[in-house]
Length: 316
Image 1: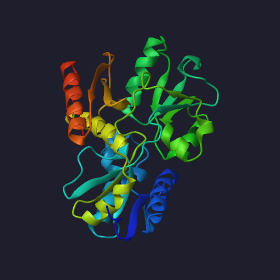
Image 2: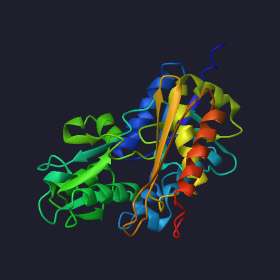
Image 3: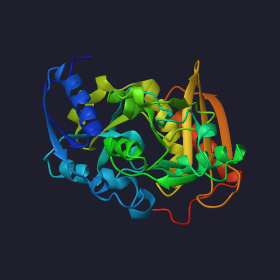
Image 4: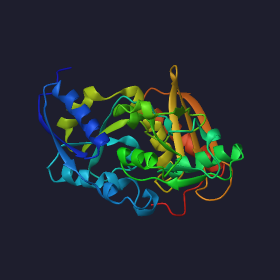
């Protein structure tokens, strides 16, 4: 297959240190293939609203809307996203052109003094930004008999969250391991939660590249950056979220991993408030294309609903 012709490509990116790392990573890969690449840094609404949780102010779209406007009006050609921040349904006229190889998808426990949940002092405060982590942490703390621990919201970019921990506002915080590793902050990770302990969010650790759907030239240029094994995993995960009406106001986990040629998809759902037990579902099938991955996701979503899971009343 002939190589795509070199192009001038502008990448729209958020301006946080992690977002810029991701954009620079894609820039280097494209430049290695002969393309001329520049960055267009932007501040999104999600970066500006830091005093409320995402579930209360508009959800994942807050991080991508401004970038999509730049694609729409031609100021930029592609947008690089952390896939877990991308809404399950893209607006009409936009397409996910590429999913890149996944970094560590697990959640990380970050604490200067506590090895894990069991080591938290009385009345400790744990910070997290996601309802998914809230319900999974609450379930784990309940199993330990730790009803004294408070789980509090944690907003801001990665550096801001770490600063709040270092200032003593929290005894521990839970973050995505991928972001810490990408920024060379692996030393801050006290431990990682295996998926059996804290099932990751759909798309966690993966980067997606968004384009206007009519830009066949860019879709072709990005093809060498795609990682099919990751794409199939996140397609199954995101289908669970889409089928459940997924948004930031729904505490939903979905994680797929390969067992040889078979794809295992596990999902979990919990009540945002209250003490009902988690609903879990799992399925393992042979998957060779996106249609099969999405069918697996739909099957697991149906199993969640049969188990009592439902869309949140405050869904956005």
